[in-house]
Length: 141
Image (cartoon, rainbow, N blue to C red):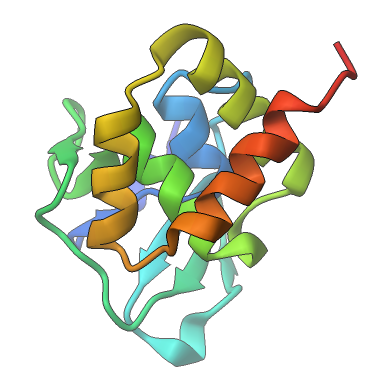
């Protein structure tokens, strides 16, 4: 059976709900991958098991590790997955972002690392704090 990883032939970074899932922050069906593309014309394209999200400044080296089954697929750390979802809100459902943030706060909290990653990607402190507060005040449990 073909998987999304089998279709990846060029270096790319996982993003959106797929990144949150692979980082262990949410429970989500990972048979469909959301990947970054530097080709603007491909934004929101759906190809088999893959959705592409345009990012003109993909960072292929910061806070990523290659997938064991396909080294062309780069998996972001928990912090990078969250920061990129906040920076690109069209990449993820808001409910999944809140779930990922809540799980990060409860299980993996590393304030220094999270703010460092936010700084690297140009996510302002106020925006990050807004989403952290949204997650802390979410009482849907």
